[in-house]
Image (cartoon, rainbow, N blue to C red; front, side, top):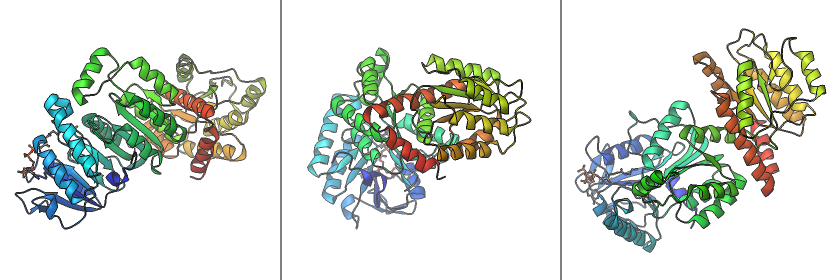
Length: 483
Ligand code: COA
């Protein structure tokens, strides 16, 4: 049963129990979102209505003339057990309980939650929540968030899955991801995780073809041994980036009153994340910075990084940032330096960082990357800092650069991750976005890009240790080189 939760993400039939007739109420906005986005069959349950927002409405689950995959429950906590019992009798496969008023509110809520689990088990159902916002899947339009489209952005389909214990934070991140243009494969907020928890989600996403990278926001793990065992298995196949809060004593106290989670000692979590191959992020931006990089680039085989830049200052900052993270920015061999010298301007710097200067034209970057990728120096990763605003760089740069990179990757046996930095304003942002659409993740500062390279190095080390490195390189070659 663990991980068998596909029906929550691609249901055929969904019913909202507690659908409201009044705009602005949770049960109304939830139904409105589903009505606008969901591509399956939708029903509502409300004893007072025959139809809401054009959706057929029934007084109870029993009177719906069809089998139901998922019931989204949005009635006050004291009515949830009765609804769950009804759902069980009706043969509903899964419940998503949005309602709060369970474990997170103390003894009475805990008792109610235990009874809810009993009912769910008795009928062989699965349960997401309670105290959650549920799921959002752009591909199927399954959306149980109660935040209206006017106030909340919903990302398009993409390759990053995001699972969040917190509903509000999860929703805010979705909103931000939509604005930032980051696509999502699956989103799930499981709140008190009375049944479906991180283990189910990890096992499910491991086999989900739309998901390349899994991101998790967690406050605490109850079943540590099982979680870390599964985590260590999943990370062989897909990178998992974890944002774990409740790191401080006060933060742990806050986590306990938020979702009733025991945050536990942070240093233990840290050690076990490392031992399981997970990558730890420390903020929302970092979670997605790392996820984008890990989704778009291959793992690094080692820690030797070359910096290829149009700006000298950024090259220095990049070198500092990489070195501070324990990565190497090694001197290049004499033969590489002399090859670079031949194609670069006389005042360019052919060392590492390779600085093509503000007088550079596209070809300097294109020829330099060719030399670097094929050099005897066996570099493991590239930080690329094109300054799109300099006069000699044309709007064709990304295309020419990517074509050359792909040509070299095709002709050699080796691929290395390339992570870009584009510091600047609106003109720069246009080309950074273009580079991303072509497969190179771009960041606004060398410091952020350096953390991504560090994650690719750490992930590469883990994959080498577990014997899955070549599997990932092959997968990357198949996706990157065919687009
Ligand atoms: N079956 C179906 N519908 C029922 C029902 C039942 N047994 N009993 C009542 N209803 C209807 C109500 O008539 C109402 O519809 P109406 O507005 O058209 O009259 C609707 O269901 C909702 O019930 P109501 O009593 O008005 O509840 P509410 O909307 O005030 O609150 C919750 C319900 C679930 C939103 C609220 O209890 C709650 O838990 N809020 C917190 C949600 C949250 O933060 N979740 C976690 C996010 S991270």
